[in-house]
Image (tube, rainbow, N blue to C red; front, side, top):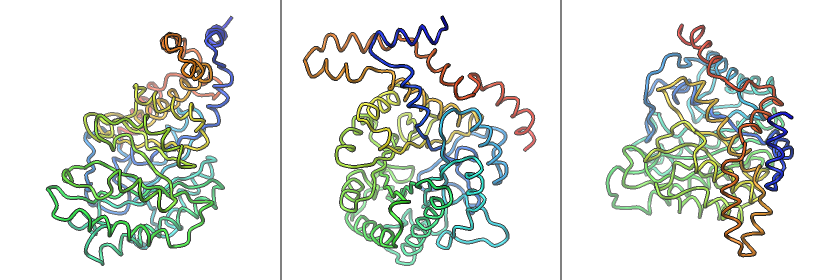
Length: 411
């Protein structure tokens, strides 16, 4: 009997179906962020990162142009099992000759990405880029008191919705558009209400552009603070949650964008109770919103458990979001994406109906024992079988290091 068959029997004894878990995971899509490959630089400006964003490290082989970024992503996709989606920021427009500022971006500026995605059978998610640009004035964009600045960024948001419609029409898959702004103040502001009033008005104007809601899912992301924005963030959690409730758009939770003692896993069930869909940007904060590479840690496991337990796999849009320039960037992609899939598989291998019944019947002793037995169940054997069925090699570091020696070192 193979190790997988033995492992399957052990999970069955606990009340879990390994075959069903693998088949379910094979149909779960995770959106991979493009900005890990070039340290969030993009192709539309030479400006350095700003807006509370910082990438540390100088590992060799950073992608310098669209061709190199796509080449690197192809290797990552080859080493990642399951269904993938491409997640783009607006600053990754590919210009052929003429250039356009962010308030004048058009679908044809992203044709290269559409061709790339269609050739690989992928959809595309999208993010307006409200940072690293001269029109970010005094750390403000959509909340700026300068009407010229605010209008520039409103136009950018509208452009992005139209581009997302193009993505959805071309790929045949809905496009999730995530709005996040870095607006805030380093020190204590005199007026907290005014910037939020302007932000609300700006969002209203963007959403009034008449986009196709069957193809484009707009979401809003909050944040606690950023570098240089320590005292006040316009798009706080309270603002964003109230706005999505009022406007009918989708909430997005980035698990690095909360206070250190808050966990997104505890929020998922509440959000799904009141929203038909939810979006997650999956990252790993170390002491703050540090965007470390996602690993199979406790919080990632808990987030996956809550999604599965809430029957949310078809309701939650999953995307990775981190950037580390201190290690091989392709390995960072593969490690993070595989970690998300491992967490989902682990959650699918839990006898959730059985454990829920134990809880509701007050049999907490038996529930604790079941939870502890699952911790030492042979998960690795099920994961290896999933990789085998997906046709993906188990160990990827040798392939990546070989690519580094042959390709990355020459950049």
